[in-house]
Image 1 (tube, rainbow, N blue to C red):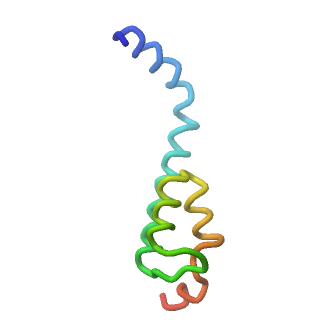
Image 2: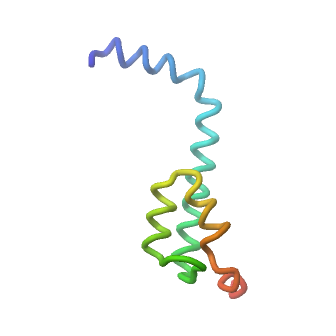
Length: 80
């Protein structure tokens, strides 16, 4: 790969940054919120901490959403 190829790839990506950047920020925020909640509470409807950490980190945007919808134990949130 040479330098001219790198610049042409960058030129292709730049128009999409206004869409990509907010999605990346939302993804990172959801992932951090889900990880912090999972580590803090450690009570789950299904599975255990290790499984949920892997799902949250590896399944991108859907992993944290799955954790909040089906993974966390509702009773664990009442202690806050």
